[in-house]
Image (cartoon, rainbow, N blue to C red; front, side, top):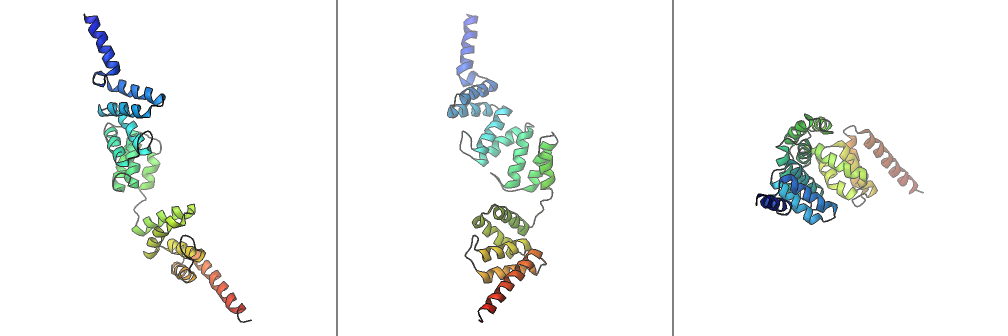
Length: 233
């Protein structure tokens, strides 16, 4: 009788979630995942995570962050990373640092990001110390923040996305952004070509001793002078 009961428990433990350990649920999810059944795999991963298994909580966080096997959801990813991070998981702490820094699934908070990066760095998690050092320099003004965002799109050649950020930074007095905005108007990059506006923004940057802007302004004014001269003949 006892042998039958033990056998029954073994069978239940293999197929019924309530009788399975968290590790077994994670393993069951991995089996489904390897078979290509991601929907069923996700169910088992969630079951293991809900049982408090750190590895499963981190896994759900990564899945939600990357949008793999389940729809991307930064807010939910943050919930599961937090559960794992509170258990001391360095990778989850690093993810939370990154999400706090970038404002993914939560308000942007450099102070919070530093805390999570520091926790991960204390466990020698790869990249955490570098991230902590980098963010420590991020006491940026709004103009610097807008300029940085605009510069990323600008360097990628995505002028349409760069324009609103560069314009905001330029209006707040950032010389690099004033120079870029001037060039964008002159070349019609992400905005309708407008030489007058181009010269205006180049001059603003040049007035702040921006060397590239001053040089560009000289070229533009020289071209305008030559055009006027040639029109006299």
